[in-house]
Amino acid sequence: MIFDENKMLADIRAHLGDYRYNHSLNVAASAKALAEKYGGDADICYAAGLLHDVLKEQPRDEALEFFAQNGIALTRLEMNAQKLWHAMAGAVYIKKNYPELPDEIADAVRYHTTGKADMTLTGKILFTADFISADRDYPGVDDMRRRAEDSLESAMKEGLRFTVFELSEKCVPIHPDTVDAYNFILLNERK
Image (cartoon, rainbow, N blue to C red; front, side):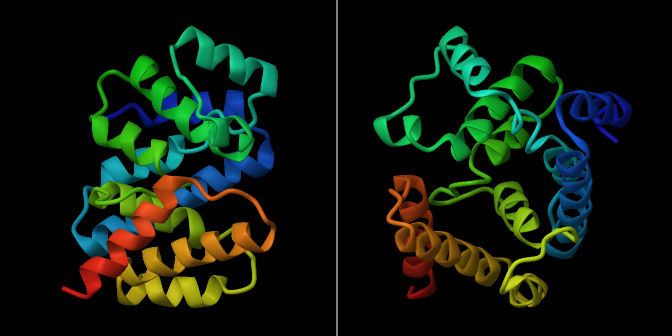
């Protein structure tokens, strides 16, 4: 392995409660399995899975302070979408606390909630693993798991469609990265 797994486990254990810690372990396992299936680096994807939610439970005030200290400027949409903060903060946290890790891990963590156009293989794997991990139980999860077995792009498209639909149903703004990711997949299908 290219990293110290025990350090990562201790780190996420210190930052996360039981539910989110177990979720991170499940996402890491799913990411590793998807990497093995689709030709990704299993160690890198596993590490991304472990660390993807490292700052998910950070209190609002601490998150805002973290952004200020690290020069992270939130757009108006991001300021009003606290569910996205952990991905942005997590990417910076990983770069600062795990400089030995390849940048693709921080990039995958940064976009695991919104997606983005032309994602890396590691990014696609983490995005999908977060949707299909063993602890997930939502309407449509079995379909997502089947899609992930058939095609990473099919799972990505369904995950993005699900996100766009859910947010639009709630009349919540949709991050432009999510729209870009969805459109990118659709347009590439039509080539």
